[in-house]
Length: 271
Figure (cartoon, rainbow, N blue to C red):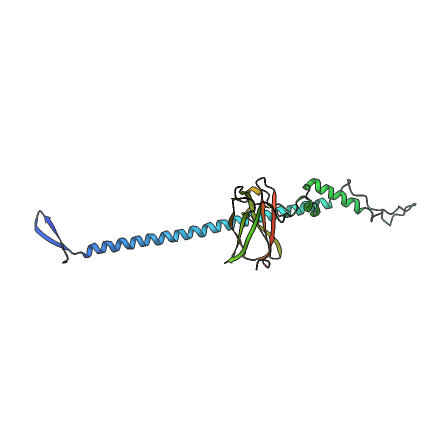
C-alpha cells in the first residue's frame, strides 16, 4: 500500500497559489509526543503516591512518639506523687528535735523510741496512698484488684509471629472465637511492646493510646475492635530504632471494657 501525502494550498490575494505537501511523519510525531506526555504524567503520579505513603508513615511515627512521651510523663508524675506522699508526715507536724547537749537539763529527757515508730507510720502512709491514688496504688493491691487472666472461655490469641522490617517490628496474631460461630466474639484488642531504650523501661501500645501508670490502656474501647465468627488476622507495627525487646503483651477486652485475656510472649519463646 503506497503512502498517501496531503496537499495544502496556501492562497494570498497579492500572490499566486502555492502548494505545500506534508508527509505522514507529522502524524507519527504527534503520536510520539502524546506517548511521552502520558509517560511523564504516570511517572509524576507514581512519585507523588510514594511521597504520600512516606509522609503518612512519618505522621504515624510522630503520633506514636507523642503518645509514648505522654505515657512516660504519666509514670513520672505518679512516681513523684508517691514519693511526696511517702515523705509527707501523717499525724501533723514532725516532732521537735531533742535538746542540744550543750544545754544541761536537770532531768534527762527520756529517749524517744524510734524502732517502733516506722511500722504504724508505714501502714498509715499506705492507707493515705490508697485513698489518694485509688485501690490499686501499691503493687500488692494492684495484683489483687487487677488479676492476670491468662485465658478466656470465649476468645483466644493464636499464631503469633514477630518480624523485623527495616527499623520496624511487625507483630502478626489471630483473634479466634472459642464459642459457636452463631455467637461472634466481640471486643477490643491491644498489643503492648515492653522494651528498654537507653537502659530505661519503655512501654508502647498498638493501636496508639494513653497508658496508666500500671501499664494498662486508660480507655479500652480505643483498641482494635473485632467481631469474629471464626478468626481474624491483625498486624501491629512498632518502630524499634534503639529499643531492645523484652516482651510483647496481648490484651483482649470485652465490649464492657473489662480485661478478659492477657498473654505475654518473649522473642525467645516465639523462635
